Structure formats: structure tokens, C-alpha cells
Amino acid sequence: QMQLTESGGGSVQAGGSLTLSCSASRDTYSTFSMGWFRQVPGKEREGVAVIYTVGGSTYYADSVKGRFTISQDNAKNSLYLQMNSLKPEDTAMYYCAAVDEYSGDWTELPPYYKYKYWGQGTQVTVSS
Image (cartoon, rainbow, N blue to C red; front, top):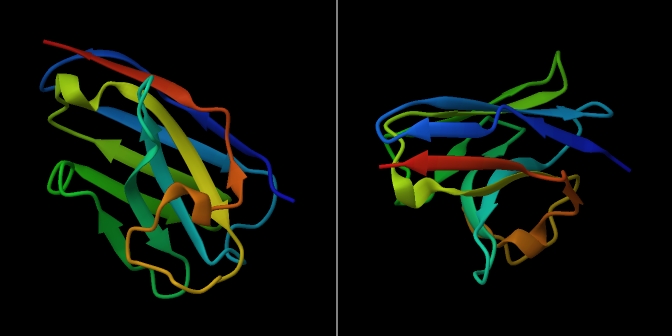
């Protein structure tokens, strides 16, 4: 089991920056992948950025490439998402997720249901 706790959300004007943090209840170096997902009411949860623990490869949704950066600090059992040049369309609930094992049929930026552990989410609101 793993508990994940997000923090760092808030309200910001367009063009601003926020850094989301995710604290894990146990070691993150044993995970296969961790990631950030977001969801707005009425829509499916979408992948924003994921990182693969072995090798550190990162993948981003096209909508955030060049603006968001995901990073993982295994010494602190933490995951981060640096968000720059925020846009109103980035407004959503942001979730941290993790999975311990590869489960087959895996794409670089996999769908949310490939991840087993989830935090409660942190709201990000970007005003124009």
C-alpha cells in the first residue's frame, strides 16, 4: 500500500507559476512509475506528466510540454510538478498517482487506470 498526499495547489493568474508536491508514505524508488493527472467536472481524468523510476524518463501531455516539469526525489519520497506559464485551461483538480509494477499494454503517457495509488487531489485555478 501507499498513501499519497498532494499540496501546493491554489489560485493564480494566467502566466503565473505553481509547484505541486506529492508526499508518499513509503519509498518511491520501488515504484515503476509515478505521475500527475488532472480532472475537471464532467470529463475523464487525463494524464499530465509521468516519470519512470528506473532511468528517470519523463513524458508529457502535448498541452503542457515546455511549460510543466515533473521530477521525483526518492530520498524524500516525493514527486513534484513545476507548472509555468499557466493558462486558464490548466484549471483542474490535480492528482498524484503511482504504480509499483508494469502491467502490460503500457504507453509512454498511460491512461489513469494503469495507476494503482492515488492522492486526494489539489485544486489549481488559473484566472485570465
